[in-house]
Image (cartoon, rainbow, N blue to C red; front, side):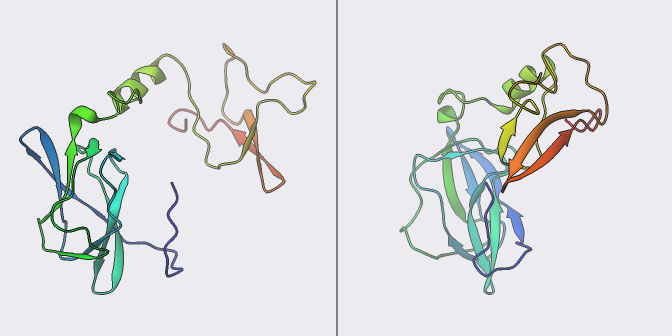
Length: 175
């Protein structure tokens, strides 16, 4: 999910929340002093690296991401629900229920995605747009199951704003 900054800047400072295990849940704590805003609602899923809100520090909004060990569904939020809640370093931002995480919702976890990737080659596109597996409807696809893919070989076309972009295989480590 791309998050455009409200003030039009190209660089958005980011912080990573602190995670601490508690009785049956994970607590996300403030990485700095500031005004906590845009917190996820109770029931929303939080995964590692996802944006969990913003921390305004001296007028500058910092995007706050969930740490690697934070997976679960947001429980009730501590304190009153304010547009901008003052927090200190280490103050509680969110409580997560790890039992109600991706596996319980039928979503893939990082481990299950890694296991699936071992079964075959997967490709992550650097762009978003309309995917085309073949150059024309009557022609053969660029790649088929069982094909040997070589560096530089076109594997798909992506149409972005009426412009076709070739997506090529970059070799090992560029999946």
